[in-house]
Length: 157
Image (cartoon, helix red, strand yellow):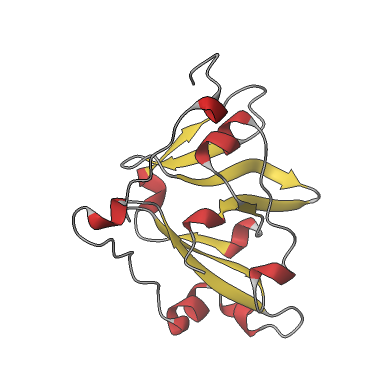
């Protein structure tokens, strides 16, 4: 963080990062049948239809899936843009699926690193390779439900 710098007074120059190097191709999401295998009870329940979403960190090392109410995120509780220092710097846009509705693929859990600050009421989880903010673990109940804050800016929606 640079102190005493007014970003509004700086001159900006657009750089087309897409034109440099190879085109980014994100990891392929799992098939819908795999999503049904990962969440068998939740995807077949008719009480509240849930849709699986796939996400990955910037480098693709961390891949994960999560369930939210169907048919789109817009019908889910609001996407949260927290104004705290770390959420602002990591550009978090958070949704809050139940912990049981989040699945880290392969050895993703071992490739995440953690950071806690302040009162240490939550754990911010990042990719060890690229540093992308993946999720926030609230260490149990939040608003009466055991949820994780999933960064949807990493999702393929």
